[in-house]
Image 1 (tube, one colour):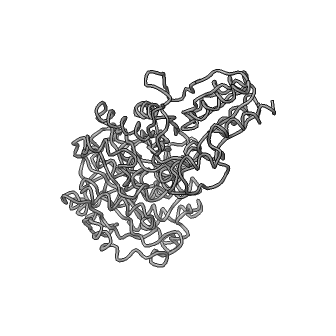
Image 2: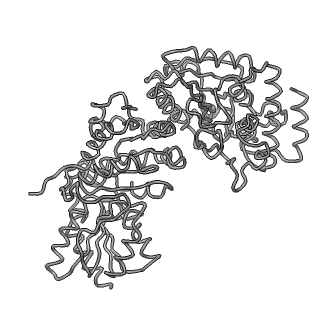
Length: 275
Length: 312
């Protein structure tokens, strides 16, 4: 895979954000603000770290990415299209009857590794994949993106214990810590802090990063890979709705709402200008 | 004297055999390794055995992860915790992706006995058969449980095996043909048909002999696979015998009897009576005492048979 510099990655992130907004506006429904918060996490993974081959999506030795927060599939779909798993035109068929792009991440989409959407299941699925790699003596790695609201689910902590118990070090979780969930600020709905200490006490290596800073994310992915004997998590501090001021300001309302077509031009323009 | 053995033993024996013949088989357990007989596999193939502690939801989604990598993942716990506590994980992680996860749900039914309602799984057949892609099997004895488990490993997609804790009489043998999805006619009869699964197959055979004394000949069918259901055999029985009794150690709400009646009512409506738990929770008691208390025995089947005959 050709390594891109940070300016190039930023350009890709811009394109992905624009695609996400166009897809959601066209679909008329979907999860906007949580999709925008995890763009750099997914872009840096696919353009810097993840060993994969769009021409051979089922390559047995590929790294796996499990989108546990399955509702924020639009940036994943956009990245998969950019990588060439399917055509760009497919993106505008998001959530349509018969589309390969379901409303939540699904195995039907080329390049998508698991069906998710009922929260809290992806980390367990990732553990199963990582343990299979160990049994088969393969050295691929597994990446799993969690939402901050999602980790209210008890199953996440069951899986966190499993990963450290079995010393699953070919696993890296990423937490899109955008601080807001459907009912409001995470700290008001159900406080997660002290979050770093929680994961550490569960036996994980914890890396904190600015989730919109490519340098920090790439360093974090490298650090995670270097850690042996325990799983790693990147707590990525992000902004819900990142890139579009009217969505950032109203991120909770835009959790499960698509931008209106009338607002689309304004949003696209801002992304282009803000960079 | 009829030999007795629990169906969970057949499951455990099959796991050991599969461990030897199929390197892709992995076994997962949620702190019930002895009870589900997963321990027998663990002893032989510890590197392919994984314990999750008391964390069923985690176990089933992890099983899905294994299956995504080509493994055949047998996940074992009590039926109540598999079908109830981890239903959403089985629905999304397992069934929606149509993965090779095979569920060993032991301690099914009222015959769990003294542990009482919290542990008596009376709803698994219902909960599992509503899931697309799921296969549901209720073996009648240890021999059938072993055959079903071995076939489940190579049967495509998710499979739920309902297993019992108590020893059941052995009424089949390994040489008799068993195929997932094919109902087995055990006795011929022309006056009515009794469909049974699990321990109730043995009771149905007893009922057959008692009914014979009354001059009634009952066809007895072992409906071990509740899904996919053997429509052909059910329609044939309805047409030829004109009345149906179903018998299951399970709630009648949505269970095997409901599955049979769905087929009959759409294809060949005839009177039907269902023997099972009547929409209530169980309670503590000795296994066979409870079976009698809830009418889950040959007397209950005979009574239902005579009633349904009057409706013909």
